[in-house]
Length: 448
Image (cartoon, rainbow, N blue to C red; front, side):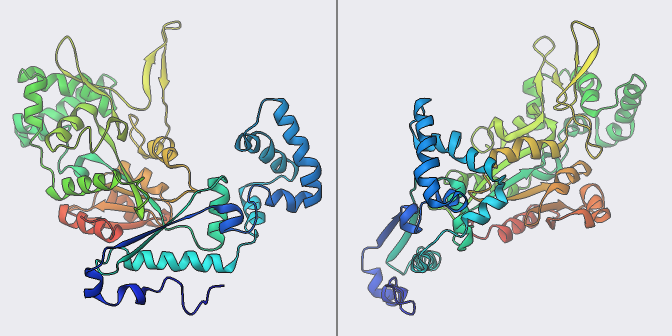
């Protein structure tokens, strides 16, 4: 039995003499735990059933009968048996849900000494594995025929889980990842900012409104892009050249590249946390792709399935930039010759073309839905009013990095007006350096 006052892994014995350890080859100890009857003192796949049915009845009647039925139906692997027969039976018979099941399971016996061993090794790993002095490094793993839920419930009970967080970084694009509005940047360069903002833009938008076009994405497709492409005889190449020098804080490029480097180590078994990043934007595919290419961020840092934005493309006949809505796409029904709407949303916080909250809830988070395996922490970086929709969905422990401007507007204004509705942590920033400092505070283990 372990003496609790003198842990077997005594860092004083391995880490005190700095010079001595520098002269010795590091020793990397890898501890692999089986779970049932090893780390814990029971079988987690049967424990709840034995409690509820009674051990004798379960082992001698129910379990053999169900296994016979499963075998007769071609199910011979125990994991498949549990999924199709075992768990459905006990959950149905006792009307269990996640909470009640976990309450029963969490009482499973575990040797106190085992908990002590695990915590002692974990303490050594955190404080000595990478200090450059201690020659003893320890890493431990669980390799088990149980499943994620069973293991997580029991580890939580003994405060042995939670060391791995999954950070989900969501970037708004305009005025967040980049320092301009990509939908207007080329026009402002070619027409002049004042002429464009005070003359051409309001005139075109008024015309569009009179003709029943009220959604900005529709306006750009039918009026905005055709006007500038025709007036200056642009094509994909010349437009890309004009757009590619749009201002971007160098710190922002550094942040996303640093995050991407850690992403590549998400499954190496060594990382204390996992991290993934996405773009959720009211721009369009073409605008984002041109700018990401300029900074070597497309394809490797941001792959296509990490970008949620309005579809954009160059028309094969005219060469002009085209775009359409991501949500609430209006389609013509060939049979009835009437309009129908695909991918609808009815959010009153977002524009009709895209609901960022819907994207976060229905497309981003389901990719990280195995909440029993690690704790998700969302970091949302935004500036505009429609960024308030996803920010309002964030939970306690999540972060909203809210951009500030000289005049309170956009997301900052919505946060000030509705702060009592928010559960997440609010951190503000004005420039790349301040944003980088926010990331350093929230992710101190990431080497920015």
